[in-house]
Length: 375
Image 1 (tube, rainbow, N blue to C red):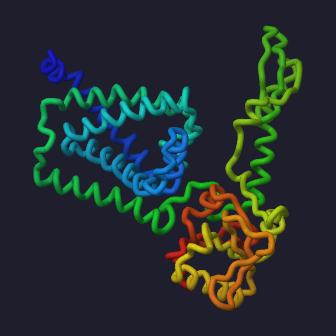
Image 2: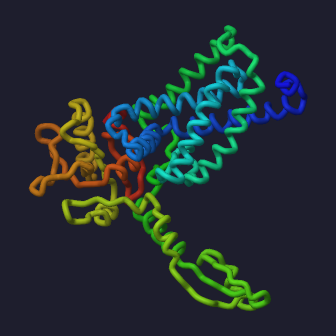
Image 3: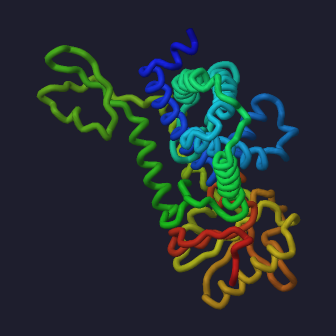
């Protein structure tokens, strides 16, 4: 019966559609995560913390690069029909695992963001689980269709393509980790004025919290509107009932850009720094004491460049500064005023543990990993 089903034309067509959709989804998901391995690593870290495996944090980044690359590679191999039998087994096993994992994330062991599409598309745990429920039958269909094929009998072309996909997938993640994401989809990308973006986010958040309740004059039914929905202005149709604050929205709407906060011990200096006129270099350093000699030298060159331009230069770090320590020494004779920032915010601002972000009148004009500083 199984062989008869596999040979039916409609079933072959169904499997072809499933294979294509599954492959495209894996390629998209793997790529948008591979170009931002830091984001994937943070999400993996959240899962490890939720399940009590925080002791393995040192494995998070290598696993992040491998996981994104493997997903991208599987998608490419499925799309180009390279050893589908072998890939379908991995696809099926991974979908069973992630379907169970996302079910737990949505119910018993909550994890806020699965990160399955990186920063490109944000899904809630339940949306992620629903997505996996759609992909799982596709994986079953593909596995069943190609079950009689050999799993390890690679032709020369298939072997060449498999190696090519492996090198490509691992290179994307490795390069994005060693430098910066190939495509920056984070809130603090080039061209963003941080102060203006924060103000827009505050306004949008405030508007989303207000709920307007109106009654349809003809049917008598109640309907809720946001401030952005102007349909309630039709007074001939709608009669105002009440205005209230949606507490659930207040808790759920937390734009990441609003988390930007720079402090000098107990004093908030965010506004004063973001309103500096002209150019300002923000040296982002995760741990000053752990900064390599090469990186110290490169950052010293940034300070010299700022001095020659007459530009401002500061240091921001998530490592708490002592009450009597207001600066850091990069090299002999080179000290920079330093402020505190949350680690998650800093890694969102710049996907590396050391580098700089350059602002021009509060607008981000340049971002570099320490490895790429070449003044």
